[in-house]
Image (tube, helix red, strand yellow):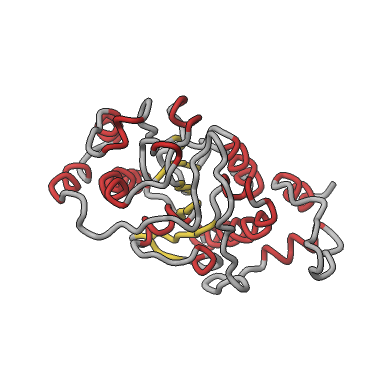
Length: 272
């Protein structure tokens, strides 16, 4: 089994399949790898495809409903609080998040979920918020979506905790795995912004529309945001589907693989 076939197997994309009436499948895994890894930087990769609105959430993982994300209006969170958070070091930031009661989410969760990984990582992956498993264990992406994320990392030669940091837009689990409300995001986002400032990643990957719109500060269809580089405070930002969505819609994994290849290419350019 060659390397490309192994990568596709990690993402459950091998053997390749096709929808009824679709064009003939690519003959080999190597050809498939070539077809999805040649996405040019700065150009959308084909026609955007919106996630199914009928998809149901995966129990135990953050919902990451691609079509129902909210946009954080500028200036919602208290400025003096933002300034305070912006001066914290790692121990102080962790303590403040642990003891935070600034929004309604803390009352309904078991514990805050700060983030996990290399605090000097070049790669930062950002999801929506904790699910039931994450709330119980205090670590992001530990359910089935977390297992898929680990496979996605392995596919581009990354591993959780090694040059990789994983965090969420909000640190507390929303009730019933709903999407965070805009005021909840505005209250919690300064914590993530401080994490980013401390980590100084070379590239950020937003997992799902909630993460994407919170980081970009404006709303748009996820399909229109994929396939090109964005910018977050001078850091290249790549947008792809949330692993929980991919579990519900496995046919979209090929598009996620395109996004991972784009991210790997962007990182290589940053490192040059």
